[in-house]
Length: 396
Image (cartoon, rainbow, N blue to C red; front, side):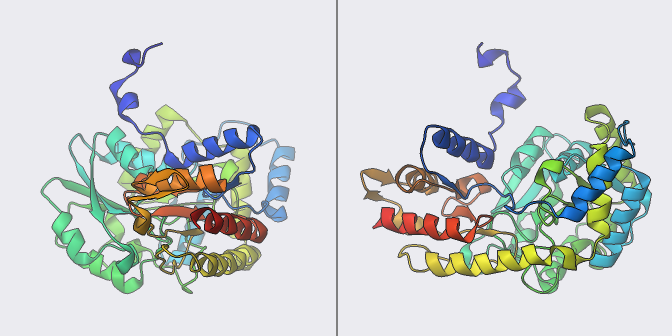
């Protein structure tokens, strides 16, 4: 059937580049190619046993009915406790909405708050889905380019320069996907100082990588003076607890925003998976020490990957302080022909690595930065060593 019969919104929407590359890698594997996948943002750890036990218990207790649209009350209480403990944020239960992953939380906020033509500031690089979620809601993404020289972080002046009478929101992640950058308290305060002069602008703070943070402390912008009533804090359990397939995300927000997202979710998916919600209570109530082994391992892998990539001429690297990605600038390869393949941009380079090195990465163009590629180190040490050895060989 022709795409003429599809809606304009779906025809105009980009396919998620991370999911597309993962699918391509799976296809090549099925054909017998030995592909090492460093494209997906998915921890390679098994879910901790204490969380599995909570899920089994929930099954035995017959948690099989529809859950409340915004989540079970005791899960919302566990989320409220987590916000207080980890972020110094006081949210009542009417300010929390549980969704089918943080991605749905983001889509809910966009659909509840963005009108046709509203501008949303996106410091680039940004997570691949932000731009299309904003467009789907009728908004206009306004990209603010950053570079490796500033650790891919937007300055207060850049934010001020991006604001127009149409600016409705700022969306960003810290720790950042894809760059691994972490905004310090001082950097967030400087952004907040700008926003205090523009009271009609709201902030979506995506903190899904909060615990995978090597700086010694995470700061939520909602905890900065003047920002609580205009910030939607988005989080979930996919990354820190290795619960990607369980699909639980949540927001803490002003009650009127939470109510609006709940209204939208009630017409689209209703409540999130009941068993996964019960397991999430166990995850959030556990001390951070229960998952520290994963964070320590990611830290070790980051240092390994930076060391190995640093031996390859042409890779310009910074030191990411969180998440599990490195985002090297590889623009020095542009304009070159390597092993018969012309490299004109990051997409060409990413394709070259897939074809010639059997390593799947993601082009930085998908994240709003055409000079970089994203490499996920959520893979075993052996796989990471082999992948980078292959990259080095292919480029030599």
